[in-house]
Image: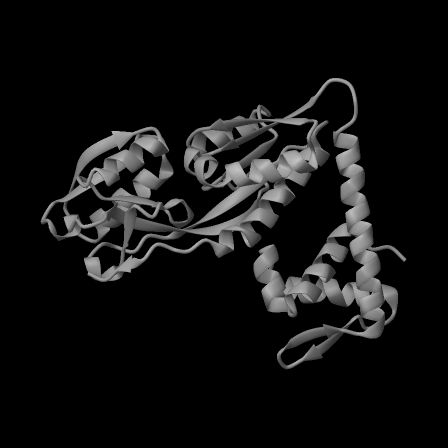
Length: 296
């Protein structure tokens, strides 16, 4: 009998979530894919592992026994990878490139968890616009790319569907102005084009008031109360107000945040770090409160 670690992880996730649909949400996989993986695993073993019930699934007796052993296999595999990563000699370095907004909002907790798991591995974090990140990934300069707007020729895995929301400083009504004062990232940021195109298509007049390369510069511009901007929802601080549809601004698309891992000497560690990102986003991030939506 042969089964993959991916099958075991999927089985554990379904058991923990209590259903295929919830497991699919956590793993960013279609419910049909989850169901197929579990069916293949049950065929390989030769016995049902789950009871399919109207409100979800539960473990059979053999499913419970297999669950305990599957979790032990996954934990042993992770322990082995951590042991290899913490070996003596020259420190292993993995290079991660992401946008500044995700580096500021996601990486502090994520890096702390990773360092506890692999204390001997050094992580170099580099920030830039997504277009630059994917080009550097193509050139082999980074081990992990975590960004939006992944080109079709790069094989990435979606780790989050990120809504893009209009925001302004609290206690302001800038959206009521005939000409909308706007803060944008500099040329080269794809989100800039999305905002401009949406406003133009909606026939909404706007004027560029602030332009910046950095996430901190963008926050400063919006918090000043002099401009409206659009930010990924998970990066919006409590000091800003998320503008609802009643404010007359066009709806912006949700963006796929993709993670790509470069094959090579650091491929195993890079994959492990990517999995840590996925676990963090489906755990900690989902518990973050969303900003209060403003009714126009």
